[in-house]
Length: 455
Image (cartoon, rainbow, N blue to C red):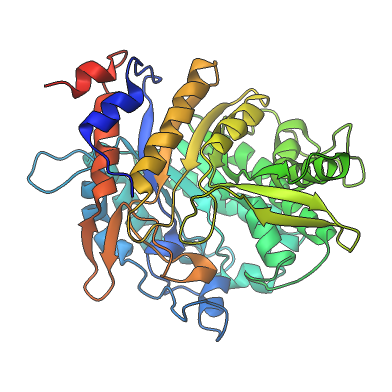
């Protein structure tokens, strides 16, 4: 374990300056189903109660009880004058539970919308800019039963939901300025429709996963236009998982496999909403044209970065193998700690000529052994990207607290704050204070870290 001391921090950043955008958003992220609890009917609620679907046999019925304890968590994350610990962040990313808001097609719950309105007000009271995601994996049961994102009606259904929500906040005097339509549409497509480890549990061909991504892209485009009409001040983005694919061996076939996987997983959805088509000059076989204008449909790109994958060619179908990176340090899920990949992702995304927000970056680390160095190493890469001219406007650590980690259950602990699930007590880990110090010392623009850490 690397011991983090002020002396180490000074040495680590010695001679550098903090030059973040004004405002630069330092935040933490969460998702509704993972923290709120799940009383409303959704595909994920049923999935978690199906034996054998969740590794540790747990469910998200209570999760972290964020639905009732949100103000406590916003106080932990934000800026307070009291004695209780506070991170000092100026932004918080949450998602809304579509199944709570629209439990039946066309029937919207005023109670749920008002509750989320109170959440937004609480965020602002604690000095936090709200970043809201409209969909983070869980579908209302009526959507799932109707075919989910494969259904022809899906784009319109989602767009109507998005319009209603944005309109509600604007009409109630608390407009939200930063929206993401979907979280990780690529992950949803692959986990649910190729690997079958998430709802609906299909193990199908790549073409089906691409159709899911394409329909989600159509939904984004349609929703973005409606959202801008509902509130012209809104900024609409996406939170896309970006996995760095590199060839395992230095040969043409492995390099080509890595390129194809990068396109199918990372770029297919993004190309569609930015360019109107996923097509590239390299790959034509999966192309399709959109019928909805992409103009004004993307104000920023959110990137969720965790690690890299090594790709290699094999003569057996499906003709490729994907493995975790081979670095010496891994998180509790076996993912390689590879901060260099964040720089690669940011450089790749800068080609799309949009502002970038790092909407997720975190580590499953129950013992809190690597989290402090993880933060420092990745933020160093972020700073290097900014120096090279890449427009990065925010960094959100995943996540403030431990949570329900989908098919992994409660055993993967990403939180800066430990959750004691028997009492729901929140206990900041040492890395909480590392991030607190990073945020504090970043707030003085162009002030050297040597000076800011000095006594």
